[in-house]
Length: 227
Ligand code: CTP
Ligand code: MG
Image: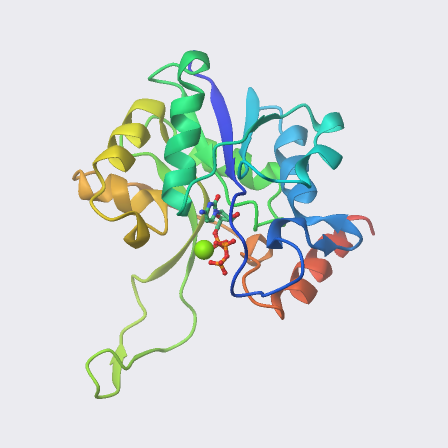
């Protein structure tokens, strides 16, 4: 039986949110963002173990992880992709080639065990793995060519995480990816190998906290849970 492992990249600095501490440790309803994120995996019965990748000099992680039963990997890299690749190599001895790895951004604290279960069930044995995503609801405009253009929104999705692939496929895809800065999600690297990961509808509560205004939205969703 294949097992399911979570790998959480948490080695970023949060340049766009420009706060005093790294984004993943900012309080969401009084609890560090990363702690909410790790709780979703701890509460999921489907996850065999959770690994979190932080930067070598991270001075915050020890205050939140002891009671969460996760393994901390101090091997964060220069880009999100490098952090994940370093993490995958660090867990090599503990994970089988056919085991599944769910990569999930530390900066998405609204994930729930139900969404994890939905992803795992919907992807099943699909060889290209899969990811949570949301259908685009707004009209899409592009200024890329210099002239304003409208792109039909049907068939367009916004990628979320978790993104789930077999260990062997994900490692191969990221190791072969030509430009770490261009790989802002894992599925894009897998797509470059010719696979078509499955899209599974996620939920707006699983937003990625990126800008200062996202904090209030995350607090609203997480605040609903305790009511
Ligand atoms: N991440 C990482 N290593 C990096 C860069 C990002 O592990 N070198 C992680 C972040 O900690 C985050 C996830 O990847 O959990 C998604 O990245 P993003 O939202 O872009 O976070 P940051 O890179 O920290 O933010 P910004 O791009 O605004 O600097
Ligand atoms: Mg970033």
